[in-house]
Image (tube, rainbow, N blue to C red; front, side, top):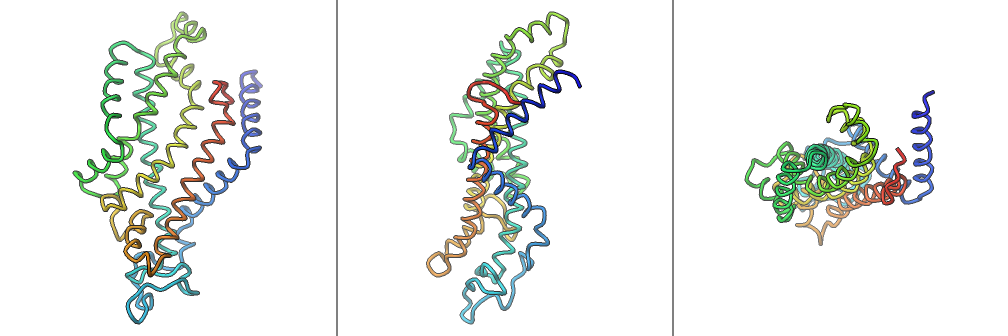
Length: 295
């Protein structure tokens, strides 16, 4: 086996050992795995259709039902099963957050790499654009764009992905400014390696740890953004269940039917907590702070 492969495997094993020694990181990983399992097996986990309004889902006075043996988490104001809506709402919320985060990370990776590696006018133009965009509150900018465009899942994915790359691009640019001056990069350039080869073979592998950690930590913020936009009515649109619009609908009945807000709030809080714990664990395992890469 080549020496480089042995070194990579040894570093990966060391990173995994550091990760699993952190109870918070392991807890975050387990909760994240549970949420992913809910997304995958949603049709089998939900006992009822999430959008069907059941005649027996309301009391004689037309009020939502509390948790019962038929409706485990109770029903909402339209007689829909809250548990089933939470299961499918988890799938919707996390799917939107994942795709948005992938878009944001991809944009940041491209622009940050171009700015950091090539420098000069390219760096100036990209960083000045980033500075201008950062001057706007990100959530308000996303809300404005979502309100101007037609609300929907596709629009929300594009909007959040389009405004979520600013800070990561600056991180990547700063790392590339350092990497491009290192001896092995200069040696590769002296041997006639192309810019593309240097970037993909020598530069990007050195910053994957930072990108992974930041993207994981940023995911919790993305989940909150998705919920916030849905809460104010410009995100995921009813009857499609989503944590944000479920909390918005339930807030009208908070004093008489608190379960309508409590259960979606628990799911939202657990997801944010799990990805923060996971991101912190990855940061310590990969030793990002000191610049030592374990992968």
